[in-house]
Length: 124
Image (tube, rainbow, N blue to C red; front, side):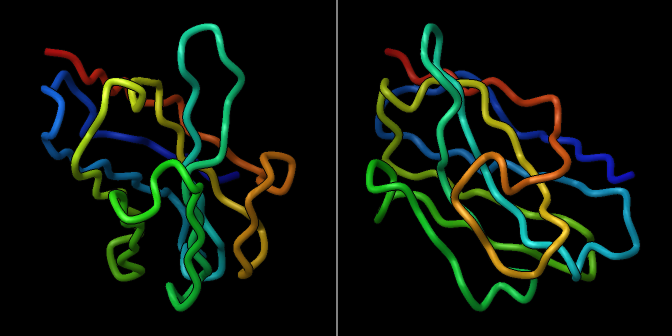
């Protein structure tokens, strides 16, 4: 069982930045690929970014490419999502997820464990 806890969400103005963190309660963190997903009100949950177990490979949704950066610190069992140039359409609950494999994937069904989410609201 892997427990994931997201933090760092909040209310910001358009153009601002936020950094989300996802802390994992497992000694095998470095074995897992990780991902970020989000769900906006009235919409289905969607892929945002994914990172392989070593961090060598990363993937992004087209909507966030160039603005968001996914990273991880295996020594701290933590994954991050740096979000810059935030837009109102980025408003959503952001979830982190872990995959019992080292290779990153973009599909929700590829992930085994999920956090409870952190709210990000971008509004003026």
